[in-house]
Amino acid sequence: MDEALRYLRDDMLEIGCSAEEITDAERLLQTGSYEALIKHLRKCRSSLMDEMHKCGRKIDRIDDLIRRSVEIAK
Image (tube, rainbow, N blue to C red; front, side):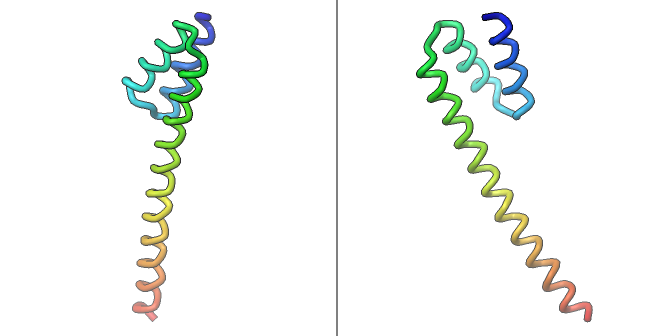
């Protein structure tokens, strides 16, 4: 279990999960609440997907600014 806990913590840190998300996941793993842990990890995944979509929209906007700037520069 200690190794699983270490992997969980290290991976969640690398992913950029909050300290609270990591603590909650560790607690769920330690108590053997695997279904709740999976649900928690899916919630963390959903948050990351939301961030990714927000970043994608920002990239689309900067691409648009670049295209407009190129047109102006011609």
